Each structure stands twice: as structure tokens, then as C-alpha cells.
Image (cartoon, rainbow, N blue to C red; front, side, top):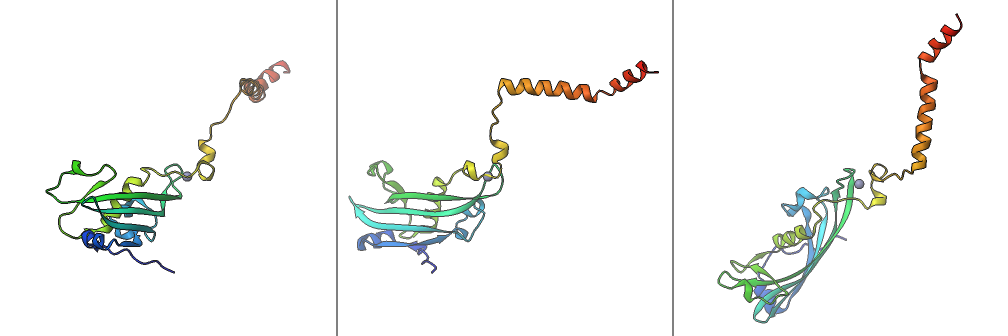
Length: 183
Ligand SMILES: [Zn+2]
């Protein structure tokens, strides 16, 4: 069953007056910057939001979560990355001061009554997304190359002896020496 799309443009003030909760998914393909970062654009991000009036501010709180495919920067294969972010925003109009906000809220600048929830979700996601993605160590295809090899002094000595022996065997001049000795 496919989930409901999150409405894109909403009026936070109206929703807050109703104490509304909305939830839905935002397709990654509709997020301009996310699209470049993830491998599979058919992924969807779940968003749950609650609108309230709190201390005279219209607030938007909730969370978003989902799984996206990114390119592992070690082996260049795809790896799934779980992302989640908490949202705690208070609407501010141009004439309001950011520093008057209660500390638990980030400012959400509102120029007209409508807010683009997709842009909002993308902004929060970009903050929570890893800058570079890697597989977990045991799942990475580049693992065998990146794993450090433990070498002991004993190993080095054995190696040195082995090298000397092969050199003796393969020395082409030993054949010449042999010929000279037996004309
Ligand atoms: Zn990898």
C-alpha cells in the first residue's frame, strides 16, 4: 500500500489554530538537492508534523525518517543510509527577532501565509545526511583492501630468508659457474 503524499503548501497558522497533525511521504525526486545525493530517486521520506500555538508562536514540531541509497565512497557500490531528524520550528515574520524565540525552536521565516513543506523537509534532511556515505566495515566490498594486515618481526625474518633462498635458486649466473667448473 502506497502512503499518502504530504501536502506541499500549507498555512501553518491555520493548522496551528486547529492543533492539526499531518503526516505523509515526500518523494526524494521532488527534492532538488537530495536528488543529486542519493542513488535511487524513487525513495520516499516519511514526515510527521504537529502544528500548535505555543507562547504566542506558531510552532511546527515532529520528525522525518527514511532510508536512502547512497554511493559508498570506499567501494563505489550502493549502501543504504537510515536518516532521521527531529523538527522543532517556530514561525517568524520578517519584523520579528530571532533572539526572542524560546531556545528549543529554530526559526522558520514565513514571508506569506504559505510554507513549502517539501523545501522544509529537504532542508532538515540535508542537515542530517552524512557528507560521505560508507558501508559498515563488514559489508563494504573494499573491505579486504582497507583492512590493516598485522605483520610481526618474525614474519619479516621468515620473508627475508625466503627471499634470499629464491634469489639463490633463480640466479642465472649459478648456471654459468657450473659450466666453468665442468668444461
Ligand atoms: Zn563500500
